[in-house]
Figure 1 (spheres, one colour):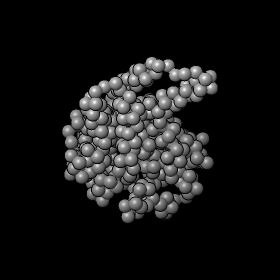
Figure 2: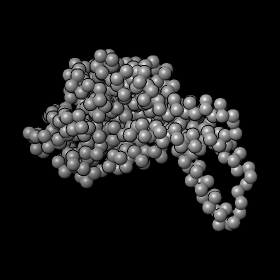
Figure 3: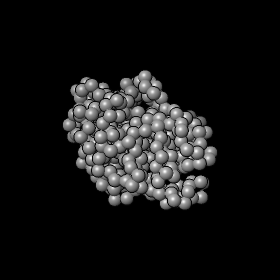
Figure 4: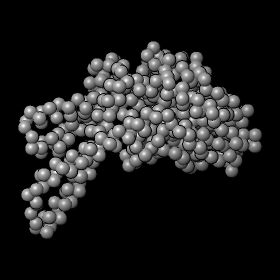
Amino acid sequence: MILIFEALLAGYIFWRAILPLRLHWGWKAALSALLAVAAFKFHLLHFFGGPMFFSPVLPEWLLLAAAWLFSVLFLFFFLLLAADIMGGLYRLVLFCLRKKRSERFRTIVNRVNLGLLVLSAVLATVGVIGGTTVPGVREETITVGHLPEEADGMTIALLADLHADGITRADRIRRIVQRTNSLNPDLVVIAGDFVDGTVPVHGEDLRPLADLEARYGVFGVPGNHEYYSGYEEWMEFLPTLGVRMLPNEHVLTGGGNVVLAGVTDPVAGMTGREEPDIGRALEGAPPGKVRILASHQPRLAREAERQGVDLQLSGHTHGGMITGIDRLVARFNDGFVSGPYRVGSMKLYVSNGAGIWNGFPVRIGVPAEIVLIRLKRE
């Protein structure tokens, strides 16, 4: 799938932006080679960076440079597509008016292409900076109907999509932990995608998680990327950092007032492991308690509502990463992409994530976040 997208990206930009240039074939060949390197960067980095496709072991500067180049092409692709739609409408108007196209049309197209390329480079720079900075804090108050008085005002720090890898190293994780601790949360929930890479390579990058402090503890669930990175090893390692993992399990927390359940990720079945089972996660949970579900992917929300969950906490979408493209991301996640939702009688919060995947570390208009949720009685 990724290879098809890379080929589509390279082919379209070659046809639209390189072929029309009035340049010697040698210059066109050089530009085409640069285009190929940037467009097929995932497979090139995988070839040179070891066996982990989602987390090549390469210098940070190289990963950032490759990500920036790919981001330029990605944005350029969509801007060219928008320009072509407008150009098609322009040609349709000329046809209806029976007018001829300007003889300078090709020159105008090349100048527009150059302008769009410069704009793409600027946006990619802004996006990579936005994607690699320490997240800010977003505070949300969520009402729960039968929340007992003792739990009124209870706070939950929601972290998601830390993605420790060749770009997100221990120093960034440490600063996220420090900012989270400054909120003095009652409970910390980490909603999956801790890492891209194996325990021997990136275990130390997550070591700062051991410093997380919360009155009722730190809990987590696996995300899809844990299954690509050595699931069993991570499920053994994360508890050594003080993170209680909840794969289709629950605990009674919040002073005995809250059932916190967690599920595995939907990708688990594709790897021959236990699929998410909300019913099993809640099995034996005392009735009448507030039920909170941690699920990496938000698309389990409707099933969670049917199972009597009051609040679901998720990540996975990165908030869509780019304003405008977030609507497309929502379509692949059952309509959920960022922020609070109401699903029947249940509340859902989808975090933008505290980190970013090294393959596309871009955020434009969709900032990373540490979410502080305050539970209130209705």
